[in-house]
Length: 172
Image (cartoon, rainbow, N blue to C red; front, side):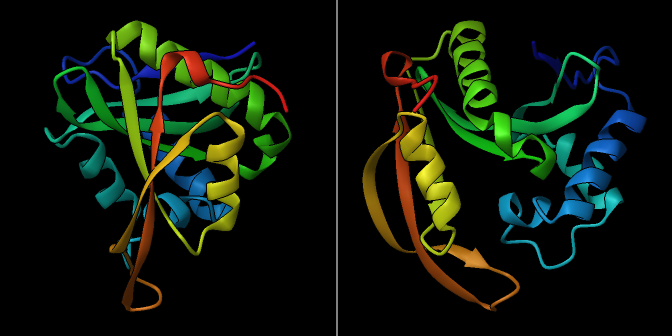
C-alpha cells in the first residue's frame, strides 16, 4: 500500500527534512537527473527552492507502507481541467512501477478533478517513454528540440504524452 504526502505552503505536509530526503535519494540513485534533465547542477538548496515555487502547483512525495520514499511528483501549467505532470520514481521502487504509477495517476485525477494530464519525456530517455506507454499514456506529439539536456549541452526532441483517467493501466 502506498500513500502520498503533499508539500503545503501553510506548513502542513512534507517537512524540509522530508524534501531533503527525497532530493538525497534521487541524487544518489541518479533518478533526479532524469526528471530534472534541464538543470546542470541541482543541489539540495535549489531543489527545496524549486518545490516551493508558485509555478509548481503541487509537489508530493510517494511512500510505501513502511514510510520509505518511493519517489515524488509535481504538477504545473494548470489550464482548465488539465495540468502538466512530472514524475520521478526511485530505482529501488522500479519493480513496483506499475502499481505505484497507477496509484499516483488515479489519485491525481481524483484529488484534483482533472480530465487529462500531459507530460514531456526526452526522446533519449527510452525507459521513461516505455513506462509512459505501459501506464496507458498516449503519444500526442513529437516535438523537435523540446527538451534541453543540460549534461549534453543541447536540446533533443520530446515525446508529449496524454494521460486520461480511463486509460490508466495497472499491470502489463
